[in-house]
Image 1 (cartoon, rainbow, N blue to C red):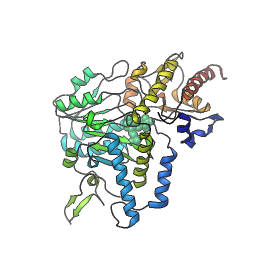
Image 2: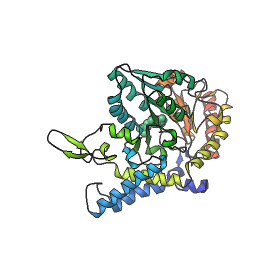
Image 3: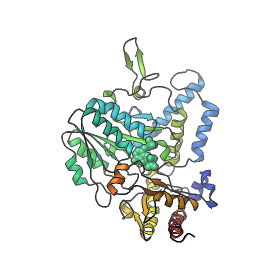
Image 4: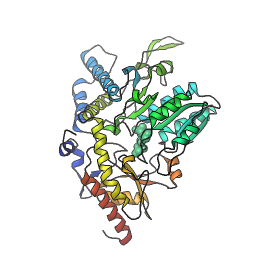
Length: 412
Ligand code: C6P
């Protein structure tokens, strides 16, 4: 990366604090990332200077707001290499995007006896919308198995996806196992059987280059807040021909062309799907986050995280009594690392780490079927991002060992 790490950290004032009298080590990035000054400043600048509603007014502020909002859409388009901004819809985030696909494409194309194929590692957001659609339509929800190391069993995938399959929906990166799933191969498989490929990009977009044309996926959902943008904004990519054929999920202002008393017609893409006043500042903040990431390039972001994984994973595996989920080979593991310590509930482990100033998440990570599959009630989880350092990784390892000692002896 061009900028050095100290410079990067200076962009995140929140990281400069003490938690429980220790310098904060923030390792809960898979839940949400911190925001650089550039993003916060983009929001304040917009509200101080340009705030107005978009696509409605002809006055100067309305034009400026519209210009910035649509410029943010273009930034998203370029970031994922969509063919056109018509293929980029702003939503509240991954959850909304996936629900929209189920409510629109799913509702129109899935019928009784059809199949929807997902995997055992899916986040509830990429599971419950399909489960409910299957229940409504009397369709069959099928799960692709995992290999012993937590990677997706592609032999099973080839068996689960059949000519009855209408939708295949898989996370590109698991928020628990840290694996990267071969969504390009899955898209090919899905297309061979006439199904569409939905990619949950919540954990991939923030951490690696993602090119929707190269993947040849039909839909991709993501959240801005996991890639340094504000909460409440995210996106849905879909191929233009699919969006043209799909019905809007929400109705109201801005998404219409003409409204008559008893029928209406819809606006052009992408606005046909964006009813009501959108999260204008959120979109502008997301655009600023993309600019921030682009100064490094996503390949460099990925490389930085992989170096941290190469450094920390062997150290975690060496801690007696610590179970690490997902592959133990650092080359197959991203910066999302879930673990459990023998004899300790993950909430106690996470509280012990918090006492040392280290923020990790503990719980089922909105992946209860995966927890059942792994036969654990919950796990602790550390997740790294570009502002994390080897020193942060050391603090994680030291604080796990200290917490283990504390619960064994009552002292650190
Ligand atoms: N995972 C985590 O701590 P939203 O909440 O809509 O921004 O993203 C949902 C979502 C969908 N898919 C995957 C793979 C995810 O990781 C998430 C969010 C967070 O793991 C919060 S539960």
